[in-house]
Length: 324
Image (cartoon, rainbow, N blue to C red; front, side, top):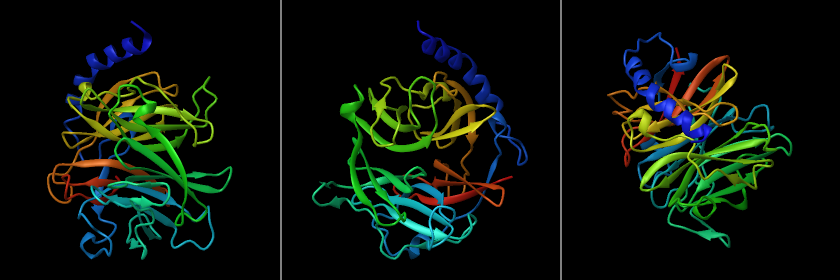
């Protein structure tokens, strides 16, 4: 039994107790590992008023401050999101405060499911945008089909140039799906990397969190072993992972099939799997209706915000919560 298997065993033995302890939240209590609780404050825009909304299901928000990166932007913050299912499409909204409101970009989608001569697929979705400070470009990662993650780059965060495929099931043995990727700056000692990628991989019919690493955010290597598994959280499937750092270590926040978000410590070397329980519980009422997923985090004026996918699949929208 290797060190990673031993750590998984420890997580299994402690995870249930941690989850049980976290079912008694109060509005002012802290989330696991000292993270704040987030309280729903509203939606960034009126979904029913959007010009481009082909499926009435919006997923996978990614919030980015652009005021310190480009000049002449549409607003201080760009919010990327996408419809789910066919035809999808990577969309943009913009605003001057994380508390909203946000305005739909008039020419959505900024990336569609057909991009000649590079690809023509049933849908594209799950945008995640990374700012590369070294070359002053935005990198947008998105999937389409579900077994392929692609990347495009931009100097203004709106108009993108296609780069290519950065992840597919052929790169991660045993997977039948590789999607919902997010990329972060994080160095793992000994790998010579600057970036890590978190993504959902499907193996043996269940969804797990996998990871990869890169020195340039373009060419990637991937660990064939799942980074986070759903069992210790009492889930069968997990997805929508986001990397958070605190207390001198690294954590992954993600949602489970039961509707809540969970948090697991993976360590700075990504060699741990210590399940800490519920990170954010879904509201029973609108817009969550029992499901809170795919979080993206930002700070405005020293206040922490979380944008997330709210509601059941096929009718989800984007929601905003603020730290309390």
